[in-house]
Image (cartoon, rainbow, N blue to C red; front, side, top):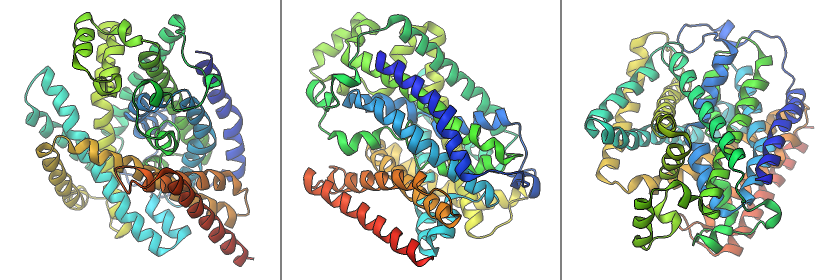
Length: 489
C-alpha cells in the first residue's frame, strides 16, 4: 500500500508542478478561441470549464484506466512506475500539447495536425488510420454492453439497436445537447466510485507487493502470464499512462473552450485524474491477484467453482468480472450500480464520442460544412454503415473482440508516438523546449516497434532481436529529426 500512497502523492505533485512546466513551454495567451471565432451552435460552442473537464475526462477514460490497469498490474508493481512516470511526463504532456495545438489551429483533429507538421503523406495515412480506429472502437463498444444489459432485462438485439441509436444522436446532435448534458453525470459517478474504492483500500491497508520488492514480471512467476513485461505492460496500460486515442478526443473540447488558459486543468488535469483512476484499480488488482483478495470478495460458491475449474486466476477472473465482484463486495448494492455504470456506460459513451470524432475527421479531410443536420447525417451514413458491418462480424464471431482489441491497443500507442513527434516538430519550429515531447516520443517509438516485432498477435519474433530492432528504429527516427532540424537553420 505504501507504493500506492507514494504514487498518489506523485501524481498530485506532477499536476501541481510539471503541468506548469508544460504550460510555460507552450505559452497560452488571450487570443480568441475557435469557440468564439467560429461559433456554429453545433461543434463550436462555449461551455463551462467544469463541464468540459468532465466530458474530456470521460472521453479519454471510458473503461481504459479500469480494465487496462487491472490487466497491467498482472505484471507486478512495475505498473506503478509506468502509471506515475508515464502519466506525468508522457500522457499528460501528450494530451496538453496536442490539445493546445488543436486549440491554436481552429480545433482541427489529429490527422490535420499531423499533415501540418509531418507532411501530406503522413496526413493521408493518419486520416485512414484514425478513421479505422474510431469506427472499430465505436462498433466494438456496442455488443459487449448490450450483452450485459440483456442479462438484466430485454434482448441483446434490442439493446444493440438502442445503443446504436444513441450513437446516432451523439454524432449528429449539437455537442451541448447530448454529450454536454449526459457525460458529466457519468464522469461524476466514475469519480465517486474511484474515491469510494480508494477509501476502502486505505481502510483495509492490505499487504501488497511494493516497488522496492522488485520490478520483475511477477505475473510470470505467480499467475502464469506468458507475455514479456516490456513492451506488453506499456501497451496494456494505455489510457492510464499514455494513449494516442486522447488526441482524437481533445479537438472536440478544444472547440468548446473560451480561453487558452483553461488548457492546463482540462487537458493535463483530466489525464492526471485518469492516472489516479488507473492507480486505484491497479492497486485493487494487486490485492485481488497477489494478496489472496479474491478469497475475501468472492462468494463460497464462486470460489468452489474456480477451484474446480483448473484455470489460473487470470484465466478465470477477467477485468470486467473483477470490477463487478469488488464493487459489489466493498460498496454493496450501490457499488453494483456503479460497477454497472463503469462496465456499461463508459464503453457506450466512448463509442459515441468515437463516431462523432469520425464525422469530424471526414468533415475536415474533405472541407465539408457541418452546420445543417442533414449535412451531418449524410456524412455520418457511411461511417454508420461500416460500423454496422463490423458489429455484424463481431456478433457472428464472439471471440473476435479480444483478437481485434489487441491491435486497437497497439494502434492507440502508435497514434501516441506519432502525436508526440508532431508536438516535437511544433515546439522546435516555435523555438520552444522540444525535449519536453522528444523524450516520450522516442520511448513510445521503441514500445510500439518492439510490440510489433515480438507480440504473438503480430510478427512473433524472438525477444532480443525485436528489442534491438526497436531501438534501431527509434535511433533512425531521432537521426531523421536531427537532420531535419539542422536543415531548418
